[in-house]
Amino acid sequence: MPEQSGASGSLDDDARSRGRQLALEARRRRAAIKRSLAEGGSVREVIAQRDDDPAVARMRARDLVEACPGIGPMRATRILAECHVAESRRLRGLGEHQVAALIAALEKAGRDPSGGGDIPARPARGRLLVLSGPSGVGKSSVVSRLRSRHPDLVFSVSATTRAARSGEVDGVHYRFVDRAEFEAMIARGQLLEWAEFAGHLYGTPAGPVEEALARGDDVLLEIELQGARQVRDTAPDAVRVFLAPPSWEVLVERLQGRRTESAEVIERRLATARVELAAEGEFDHTVVNASVDEAAEAILALLEQAAPVAAP
Ligand code: 5GP
Image (tube, rainbow, N blue to C red):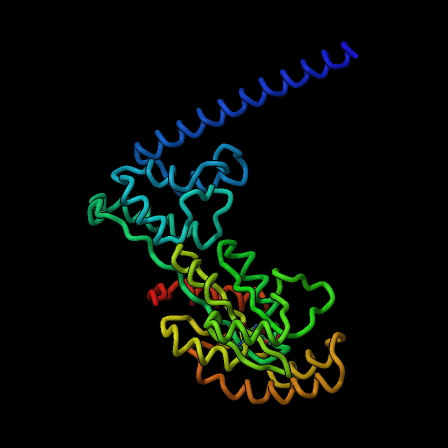
């Protein structure tokens, strides 16, 4: 009907013009912020507004860095790479560690405006975090916490021959493959490491890990002991963390409380857990999982101090 289309047309026009107005206001607001930063305004204060001010939330980290006095495009690239912040990242998407790293780098640049000069930047490679520990220690809860605290952390999706548990999604939790396919991946040299665990094969596809590291992203492998040993040999710079239970009793309790496994499987995993606990000394660091939050914080602090993994 003509009236209807006329009415909806004017509604669309109103919405479009309002949208344009809001975008214009946001651009003006960001321009004002950049001017204030150029005059020595506080980076810390600008970032603090990202939860309340949508214009700040949508500001690109790169624009924030370049707005600071004495920081040209090359130095901005270097600072972003050193802080593990993607070029296109907006302020609302920064994790707390990235915020802390950016503030420290920009405050340092403010105190030391020469900052080593605008030398050509080489994007930093990412860091490799290997998390291991006995079955039942709570690795997956700690992994979820790590990923929410460090949203840019790339979780390596392992290939496995075991069947999917309920709720597990192919390509997200694991790549579920049959033995023939897994063996073909080994034969083609596509796995960074692999191991047989509780009757099934598990392995880390090498390609996605290398691509992420080369982009400058940190990568997390949640793998068992034999795999962690292989990574020690192939990537000696990796941060290898052993997640330990507060006590053996707590571990037994957690494994027995798991409803998804049969008694025989639990018994087998307890036997493996005993062997795995004995390997703690082979790791660079031990973190006790008494509280998921505290364990995740401790692991992130270890990652923060780590060096990027050298190119193969
Ligand atoms: P689940 O079957 O409970 O998911 O995992 C069993 C064990 O396999 C866990 O200790 C887990 O860390 C380990 N695992 C998962 N993916 C990999 C992998 O790609 N490589 C190795 N070596 N272990 C893995």
